[in-house]
Length: 222
Image (cartoon, rainbow, N blue to C red):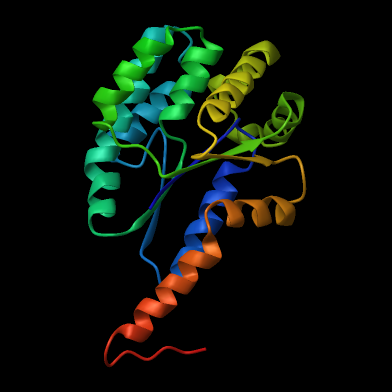
């Protein structure tokens, strides 16, 4: 199972992603957490370059290609091997972030970005995409309370972030089976309840317990 958490910075993606992996592991499942850009040595170097407040001269096309390069390394080095061994992969951002930010925010051609993503991922797509959605002003307020975590994209205009949010909604509307939109402006517990349903957390836990019971010489507690 491959799950991608998407949304504006400040929407709570990282918190939810970490909690998902903890819950999967507590249920006895093999689960890993990764993030974009990052998750590999190369990806983390690209992340530092892309998000640094000093990187003010990166043009949109270069930005899109750098995100894709980090993604290609992450897919081949981390995500695909984990999926092949049967693990659950939870990622904080994936291809739809490039569409939302570089197509929606920057105004680059969508077909061109799609083509670059196809090369970067070799066609790999998440099984489930969760959009943690909230108003731009609320997301920016949350980010501004953590000054030490601010990055280059946080300094973009409100209009830029509004275009990003609109692009996310357009992507979700185009694929309602795979996408689950969760109102992230509510309490953490309310958000978590909806995310749990979206990824069928209880079903995955039950399947893991049944699998353990069916194995010989295994003891299940509870």
